[in-house]
Image (cartoon, rainbow over all chains, first blue to last red; front, side):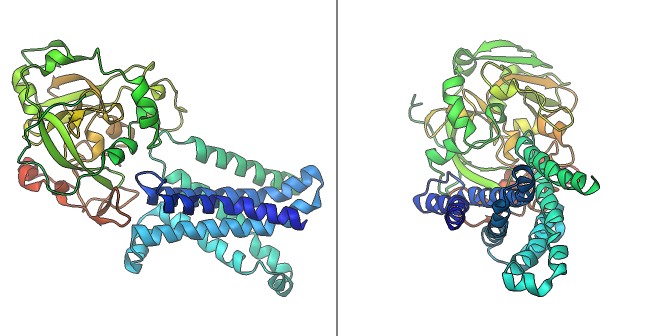
Length: 189
Length: 271
């Protein structure tokens, strides 16, 4: 299990390492900030969806150990989402707090993305064994927030598309619909 | 091929130019795909610069079809170093080579009904892969060919350029070879690439982005830091090569030359 955990860690860290190396070597193209912004955002969403895939994966395969990777992947999702917001705050607004707040307030698609990150924050903070014990049954209730967070994340992505670039968000929406639908069917059945 | 020594224009900016690499590797040319690197990857091998036919049509005396080299005969290229501001809030400084559109229009001798000029990009699915792909009907997708338009006085403004090169060489494919429009006070999407038709007409032309999302892209599309795109701010822009943003200027800094064109107009409504 430790080996698998380490492999998953390396795999999840890879996109961030590649972005940082690309930035330092100047191979991120003419607009590296855009690459950082889109890269961190996409990977945050991908890992969020991967987190939600763990439980259905256990149902499908019967392998219990996949669920034990869920926390780590969920934390990586939060890491990339937080990095995405940081790139936005630093490079779009030079860390100007008033500008950040007004941009979020004025633009629904940014508000939706920021809300998703905000929903993930308490989940990341309470992901330790200690908090799981302390919160008891409420831990599960609290962590239900990952569902609205994932939906908001996909909406955020859809909303920023200019035209004719629907393929990627459509794929995420499709996978998310399957993962959530599966749970609904399971509960009803 | 090099274009020879070009006279520089008084309209040129003294700002630091973007590099040829930046200008040719970061392009919006959706006919080749929506990624910024698609055009540089696909355009050079797919878009042949000759033969190229330009059609002049509509409300003008000297209409017809012209081979590109005949079309350019008698026109003197000059270098114009212009700012280019994309609607996506990035910008570049580009040394174009071109001729004032006004000269081409005068030569065509439009009649009194010619109130607008409409431009068409080449339509050839063999050349442009995206023109082959069909969008999903319930989602917005572009109706090819790409078209753009200007009011006659905008088209006649001395800043408006028909460009056939940059950095003293023939236009790179990904930048809209062999001939494209450059309207430096408007968002980049107005500066239509790889033009095959110039059409004079009485009514306001249908333009691709305006048709696709009229709430987001107006017919005028003048650079205006005070009128935001519905989804993002237009107050600032990232000059390609810089990490942080700088303030966007009204009419992209060309107010002295063009503000009169819009006297009395509500630029919030006519965005």
